[in-house]
Every structure is written in structure tokens, then in C-alpha cells.
Length: 248
Length: 248
DNA sequence: CGTAACGTTGAATCGGCTCAATAGATGTGG
DNA sequence: CCACATCTATTGAGCCGATTCAACGTTACG
Image (spheres, each protein chain N blue to C red):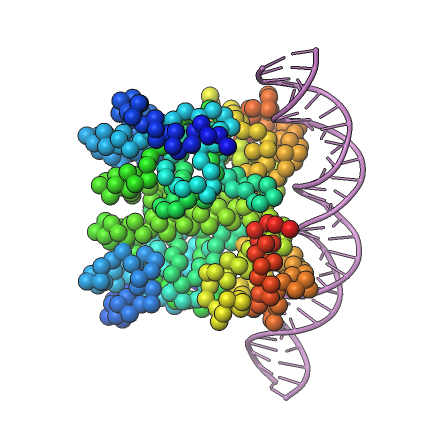
């Protein structure tokens, strides 16, 4: 699926847009964050040399589980999701990716999950071998990567608590607060939901119907407002936080 | 709880058993695995110098969520569990630890989960600051640590699929096969279950009753044998693997 | 032994799921 | 601009898998 954004295409584009890539790293708003902050300013060109910028449309595949893991990607704009499938089609979304997040780190072998764009996404692909070279040259970068991976692991453990032990309302409350923290919004109380109810359900281990009903219930109880399907306003943050933490 | 094995005690023991520690690293059966394999043989003493061996009894605390994360520990024998609690006592076990596994990596700050011994456990505590020194001296060690953490993250994602999308029977089947892979047993078909039904339930997002009933059901259907509560024999591995993968 | 902790089994309940219908949003072409 | 199709979201009714509550075995141990 989605041949247009496969690895080969990305690589073949490398030469034609190299100049733009170099410029992009230096001016990238994520320059000081994520992976890239371990590369000294004087050596940005080395970073740019192993990065390929790419634009993908909402719904497009970024990579598929099982493919050769030739790239690590970082999201520069938009929202993506990573997920795993069971043979009969049951899906678990293991994370949403926002600008600065990375995915596809499989130190060897193949991707262990799939990634797709939720909205229009701009991303940077780093070639695996080139990235390894960078990591060896700049230990600071490897330290960053370790720190980021440890943080991801910690989030994964929080998500296990959510999936294994929280009720539907607690799951939705936790999810909204996670979005409020991690994604950027007009203000603290205003959360945008770029993903569908099905995505939310597959992230929280629920069905779309239960997600929908729980939104309704939280709305009726005055915790949140739901102006439209794509946004939520926090009306009573304290109560929402209590719910998410598992009080009540 | 369990003051006897707190960090202070462990540290205060350091001097008295230093000689034994040095000897232990060189002869440790895990020498070539886990964290430690990144340290050249000639420099083992540096490794030994920041490691404190400790013995804890079944049920004892290894460290508690929220404590200052002064140590990383690796299990050298026995089985441990790591878990998080919700305020009302609901518990999610996020992993079982077997020899070679490590826990407590919080690059700064405090532990984000608790760890307790399931059986009698022998472990090695590495001081955080000393470990950081080692990592900087031996980049190979940091690479190992990254590789191990990435693998843990991958397991965590598998567990999310299990918790969010699998049925009770599929969860138990997956759990048994995980144990069969990771823990050491007399043979492939023979699995020892050192943890209680409550531990299993809290790992799989179930109740003890459901765990018990599901064992019975798998036993009656001929997938497994349950000679006693502490062990399981795989009778039909193919069917168990099908179940675990989510076929059927 | 007696007692406590752990495990199993049964009966009834319930939270979330399935199935089904409706409503809203988005886009397309006439 | 409307008619139509499609996709997403909401709501309702009934069901089911897992939980809760309870009783009873079993094992370990002082």
C-alpha cells in the first residue's frame, strides 16, 4: 500500500532536494529538541546529509510493520499514529506522534509496528546506517536517544496501567489530559482531536461506541464541552484530573 | 516498608563486601550479557567498583515508585516484578524480571514504578552516578543500554496489544509462551510459575478468578496440563501459539 | 493441629461490546 | 445549489465476557 511514500521514493528524492534539506536543519524549529539536539551547531551539515524531508497526506502509510527498518523518522508537523494489528484485524494504537516525536527505531531488522499519518504530516527520515554513524560520532546524540527512549518506555508503562486497570471514563480523561500536555493548542483548556473515534478507541482498548458514549457522559456531567467531534474544551480540569488518576 | 533492603543499607554494606563484589563480576554468569557486556574484560574492576550485590527474600521491596532513583539494578537470580499502583490500590504489573533483566533506569529524578521480589532474588545495584561514569567511559555500554531499552519498549508495545485487544484465554496463552521463552525451565514444555494468581491477574489486566478459570478451561481443552499451581506443561504448543497470536 | 494465605468454583451482576438505526459531516457531480 | 453517496459520530437495545461476591478446597507453616 501507498507506494508513493515508500523508502525508495524517499531515497531517490534525496539528491534533488539536498540543498533544501541543509537549509531546513539549520532553520528547523525542532533543531534543539528530540534527536537532533546532540549534534553541534557547527556540524549541522552532517545531520542534514542523512535526513530526507517528506510530506505525507492524512491516512497515508509512513512505514509498515515487518518492512526492513531502513529509516528512523521524526515528525516535524502534524499528527501520526503507530499501531500493531492482530491477524483478525484487531488493532492496538500504541502511540500518537506529535512534532518532535520519533518512530521506527529498530536497531536492526524490521519495523515492529506500523506508522500512518493522522493529519497531513511533515517528517524527516534518517537513514539507519547514516544515523548509526552520527550516533557514534556524537555520543551526546546517543545519550539523547536513550533519554527519549526511556521516556517513551515510561509512557508505555503508564499506558499499560490505563489499558489494564482503568475504566472507560478514566481512560478518556487520561487521554484528554495527555493530549492537553503533549499536543499544541490555542490554550490549555482547548484540545484538538485530529484522530477519529475509531483511532481513540483503538488507543484506549475500547470501541467507538463506548468512546462516543463516554464523551457524552463527561459532557453531561460538566467535565468537558464538545463543540464538535474534532475538539474538546476542558470545563472542570480538577475533576478530569481526579478521574484520570483513578480517584472517584 | 521493608527497611532492611533500602538503599542506605545497601550502600552501607558496600565496604564490607567489596572484595567479594570484585570477584563476583569476573565470575558472574551474566558477565557477557545485559548491561555488563560493554565493559572490556581488562576493566572489570571498574564495573565491580560501582556494583553492590544484594540478596532479597520473596515479597521484599527492591525499590518503591517515587523514591530517589539512586540505583539501577540487574537481577542475577530469581524472579522480580515491577508495577504501578492507582490511588485506590488497583495494580498493574508492567513486567516480570528474570536473570539478566534490569530495572530502575530513571536517568534523573525518582523511580517511576516499584519493584519487588517474587521469589528469593539476587541482584546487583549500580549507583546512578557511577553508572553514568561507566557509560561515558564505555560507549559500547551505552549502546547496549539503548538496545536493551528499545527491546523493552518493544515488549511493552506487545503488552499493550495484549491488554487492549486480547481475550482472557489469549492473554494467558501469550503469558505462558512469554514465560516459556524468557525464563529458564527444565525443558521447553515445562513452565514454572513462581508468581501468584494475583500477580498473573495484575500483569494481564484480569482478576484472579478469571485467571484460575482460564487455566481450567485451557487444561480441559487439552492445551496445557497444570500439575500444581506453580507449574504448567504445554500439551499442544501449536494451539497455544495460535491462541496467543489471536487466531481462532 | 490451627490458621492464614492462596487457589478454585459457582451464581449473579455489570461494564463494555455487538448489532442496528439514525444523524451529521464531507465531498461529488449534475 | 441540490441530490446523492460515503464516511464518521451518536444513540438505543440486548447480550456477553469478565467481574464481583461468596463458598469451599488446598497448601504452607508456626
